[in-house]
Image 1 (cartoon, rainbow, N blue to C red):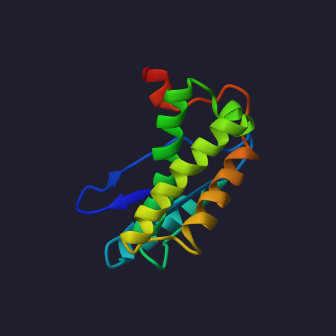
Image 2: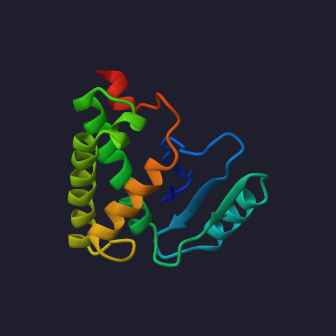
Image 3: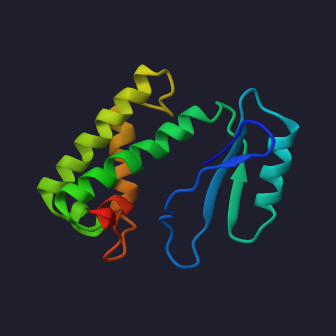
Length: 146
């Protein structure tokens, strides 16, 4: 997620969960929209292997969607000291990861920025996406810090 506020732009980067040769997907936004955001999204989209655009609902739903991943995977990974593939495949850690995702999705809903559907659907969709991609040994930076 790239958030643009003032000159110069402020960039926020997170880990990318794409297999080798995958596509990096991102969105560019500025509160209220702007031609500047459209130009930057078009520049990224012109790069090979990159999909980019300006979200019509603004950046907050995308920021919350990212938070569902990062704010759950980091703490649960550090607590369990397990890489993503283990967190997703062990029933107890998978349930803890889903519960953390659900709590964050409920916060997004309370803030009025739930990306789409219900908090339960967002947690399940996110967990399903992470479960289908983990290469063995992928860890969050929070786990590596502890």
